[in-house]
Length: 207
Image 1 (cartoon, one colour):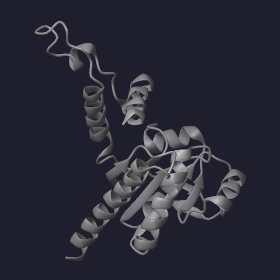
Image 2: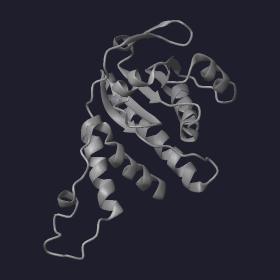
Image 3: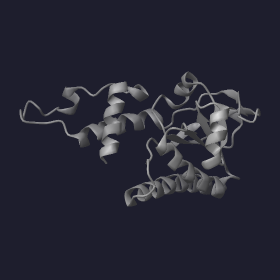
Image 4: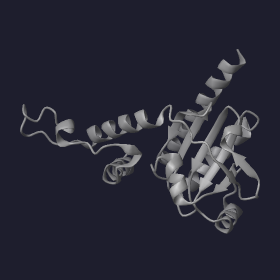
């Protein structure tokens, strides 16, 4: 929880996701009634989460055409109706943990969902990374400015579940270690969140 709160405070500083910094009057709207009121981390987190939620859900993935690391053309308009975009980089420990979750989802839904992995790492860096941390996703190496336009500069790892070009589910954080019980619970929760959302959409499509 502490790491999440630190991450939220960091988001305020860098003003990501086009969120405006929460003013003291927004956070402490009852300050006139209680001069001893203090800003609570929980309140800040709720406000940030609400703003990010409004910014991300139903966000349209920009149209773009690039080459993947194998030299094949990737066209964002030609993915399956369901697609998962994962933004990561090799020095991000939390990104590595999320790779396993995405691989599990890929194994289950690869015929119904496209998986796209996006990083600013070079092709050589990606290939070295894949030796110890293989991914089932299609891999794109793009420059940082281009990536900022795709994931709204929220941070890493960021995972977006997209249906018909719009974000319907997302995950903004990860875990740097898989050894603790809390980390395993978090990873399972992330896996189940995306799995459940995908299954619900597929069920509706099949009716």
